[in-house]
Length: 278
Length: 346
Image 1 (cartoon, rainbow over the protein chains, first blue to last red):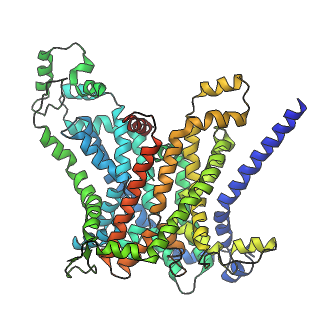
Image 2: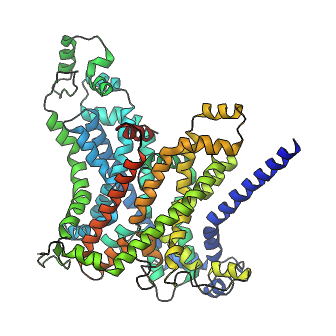
């Protein structure tokens, strides 16, 4: 009896140890950035772990006032919201076409979810030239459509799965009342699909807000740059202002962390559902 | 299939024993709108194609133009010699680009780097995220906090993560060297070392994705039927035995998802290299996707770059299908998708 107790205590402490070590490793870079964001270059360089001599917001002032960071964050937010709206509209339309069994609905569904298996990076080369040909470089419409197209597959997959679970009797009742397709879709099915729409929105937001490559490729105008491009601009400067960069990193990740804390449940379920996507 | 036919039929589900007459009434009740439901066997089809076009016009346009067409165009370009200028003619060169591709040491080296990412996925991401998932799978408050902590690295924008780590791994004044120095280790130029840099970047990548894989494993663990676990407890199996004999065998599907996405994902790595090393020092940390990017947008070899793109598509599809095929053992076809659908329902 005594030995099992000792084993149990050893097991529990091992668990606590492992869990806290990884929590430390996970959070360390962020905490380190937070610490460094209050220090100047020399202090970061000389003594990375020293506490800031005095609490100064100078680096934050620099990141906000002298760089395009806030502008980039705002742009990323706008692109995300528009892409989410477009994706939800398209995902609903495709799922509804599946629901009413239009001709070739199975093929259409496969066509739309095929994107989950295709690597987006492999189409960067022609995408750049297509965007140029269509005169969509540096335009809101261009980048939003690209975001919507590249993130559509998972949304269709989730929306269709959810819509399948909604009883057909609702549609039938609506038909009896003389409702057309659009009414059934937007007035009856849409309100019922709020949970999956929330999941799709958040998954898309995380993808688009964090996107780096498309914004580097499709946007060259500084005023239209995204959050990631704005961050990368810090790196390419000749004389890197480390304190300012750390402050910028802290500012840019703040919205993401807030959103995660608020929507933890949706994100976790969305991730589980979307884990098929590599 | 039967279920679908049942759902598809307007009357079958609302009034199972309805008559054909009632069917007509319901159709006309819609006052001119299209009747789009089928009865089992006989189709009541009026203008369904028109509806389909209206519903699918925008999705097909956007998805095709900005996703499917570029992918197809990559294949086309891979047989051409072209410098990317709109006015310049594309010259057909057959398989020349592919021949060049496989003869180049840089490309073979980039494949080797992709293999490093695979190795780190299997040797680092897999064990750590599975162990963490076992630790935090029970839904207590403290576990929920820990899950958040573990998941935060995955959430952060790659640009931010890459830069944070770049600064922390710096030779002079970087936090990592500072910590190692405290324990008496000499400083090391983590990202400047031609041999080791790719491992360092792959480990940073692992740091990011352990959180999301942990969550996937947590879902897998919570889906293990509790009655089997209870039976094992009654039989006196200790926790370790329960994990080995019950949890792990019941998580095959989850492991399959992990393997597929980890291995296929290693072929597509781009962002983290682009942010942290940009392929450097020299071409030591180039992966196929960064090589493609440089060849197109820095060297203006669009045709050659496209052949790398096609190779990435081909390899990741091949890996996905091969793994699905080999890991699917005894499951009858179709059940896999059913499962995914169910998971999709949340």
